[in-house]
Length: 411
Image 1 (cartoon, rainbow, N blue to C red):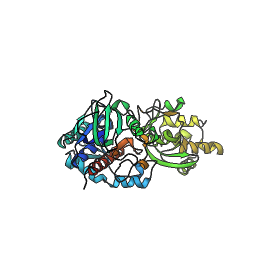
Image 2 (cartoon, rainbow, N blue to C red):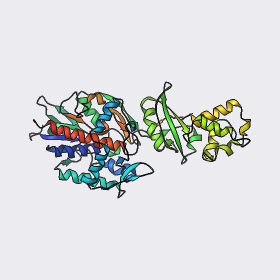
Image 3 (cartoon, rainbow, N blue to C red):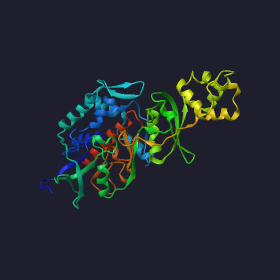
Image 4 (cartoon, rainbow, N blue to C red):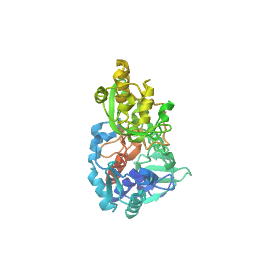
């Protein structure tokens, strides 16, 4: 093992959470080293938002986040660094102006390039004196009776640290370095995992009638139910693809299917059965296609009617009661045929991981291993698309870094 004196804080992972943890640990007076497995730190930042980086949501919504832990604890964590203050950090301290994209409700850098955010964070690390060691994957981590830690890489090199922050991410987009290694390290020090699963991930289907609608988008509301119990709901744009479903609505509800096999039901146009019934009742002698096509794409109407075993030229006034009810259910409470997800390669984030119950919510220090902290995607917290997962990374990174540095100060 290394004979060099231990550094103050070693941070495993140079993603969004790890970088913020390093900045704030250094500001707290600690000597900080980030260990990253890849040759390019912060790669997820660079590819986010289609290369534009949706750095924050335009507004904070507690219901935009999910954890199997306490909702109250999650709200408390976000109160440690309110959204307005996070935005001020980027604009006033990193000098990156952010602008709100009205249509999506996301905040992007005015330059519209993720590289601007990435460069600003890299400069901040340099200014705070943080050492960034790339291509140093942590293969083993040992805790010692004196409270210090030893970390080894794949080449057998060792590094000693007084405190460790695990910010190694989850398993989403593994080409960026998120390969689940942080979970293995956490388990080696006595932590249990909530089984990781892909979240914010496109869903797949098999019936060709739905994949043939590839490229068609429609606004919907959705609900996730399990054993006939309604667990969550939302709305947004829904996109048919050659493999199944994507778009904001499909991504936001995907973790309910991926985690526990929930049924996902959608209401096209976000209209309930009463609204569609009113439309049909006013239709007179018009055909179903004539009644529905002003409100839904014709290609979709044709497929939906085919699914309901109804003809496009069927006269609305001559619908039998059972046929009308079947159509109303398909319009307002359609159960998506889903066979799976596109997996971690296409998932924007990872659900599951370290349960919030295993950390002190005031510090994000492990309850099972003193001196070890967690932040970011490795914890069981996910948010909706639109900058919410970045917000979690920034908030949890700042808290873990600040508290780890504070832990080193006897006063």
